[in-house]
Image (cartoon, rainbow over all chains, first blue to last red):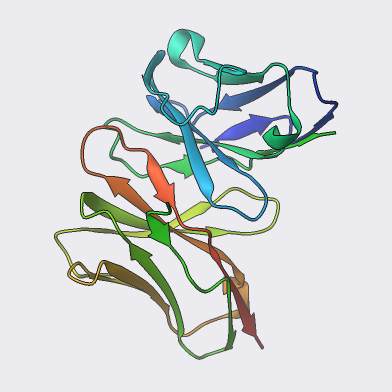
Length: 114
Length: 113
């Protein structure tokens, strides 16, 4: 069974540009989470989808970040316009059924904003 | 303010010996704790978990201990192997339906042959 996949693996953009990250969860997993790790710090929660609905977006830093999960399958996270402090590794995770199941993480997208 | 703390950024252990990784938390509402292992350029991989109603959970070489009164948990790896070298993250989940995880900063374990 395929795990969580993320695209791209790396992205280098200039400040002010737009970047869209994609996450494909494990097939059949209703719960999809986005997390971010800024260098040297802990992995921090951004938001949680249950199917196509945003269950909790309390971790989103500001309105430059927009997440979608149309159709309840894959999800995208768009950063527009990107700022220097947005650099970091963006992880996606998914879990099956109840939100309290174990979360399985993707390999992450390494974003560098110059 | 950090709710999950891993105060040791690194730990070095000889192969075959026991590795003990520690984690402290501040929020008594946490009801489930997990350990993830992370290799460079990969995502965190689930290792073992424990519910707050238990004080020990064992899976092969890995055992997690929970001391609720001290708000402390630890991961024991015995015997340690060179392939265990990775960054270990402690994570906690709040009681309720949301399910999002709160992570510590991680401890880098090096197991030397």
